[in-house]
Length: 240
Image (cartoon, rainbow, N blue to C red; front, side, top):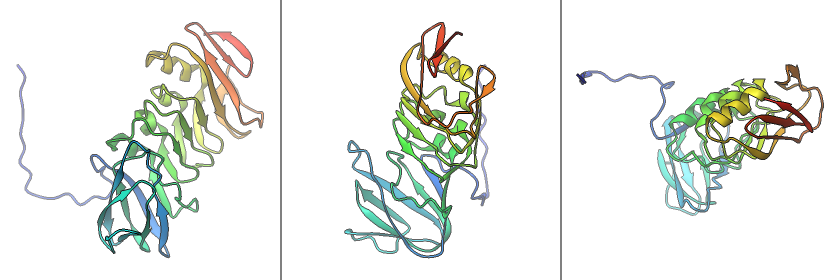
């Protein structure tokens, strides 16, 4: 018999580390105001932004001034106030192109799991994302994931196996580990039984392995392809 238990809570939990359902979270620590803009996918008209904490947002060209919530249109600029607070937004389509790379705004990778409209994003998150890469596994149709120099991004490359739309993956400068073979196995299990070309970008410091060995070359673009029973990486084919 199926049973349903209902619990009545008589209190509010104050914990900024909890996820916000339907939103992704960026942690902001700005010493001065910062002008930014969202490069939203053209199929989406706008992004809803919320401020949690002591910050405020001003929409340029709009009527919102020093508010806690705003609807920002495609390509529209906005200003974030100085302070330490959280920036919530409901879509990750080409996440803010003007995000600073100095650490003043950081995004937890696991928050991608809670973003309503993140499934088809192609992201360039250079130096601004941290946490376990498995949170990005919800980006099922993403074509490009650029995590270049995200030295606080960790986890197993196989956790990106559900991203079956990938054609380009940048991992250089991250702490992501694992094996190319396991990544391909995860892609197959998710329904991508073959792939003609997936370029994996990395540098000499990569922790991802191929045939049990770490990648030592400094070449940035390396073609990965596979069939149902073979894998080809860097022009070398194995049965797997």
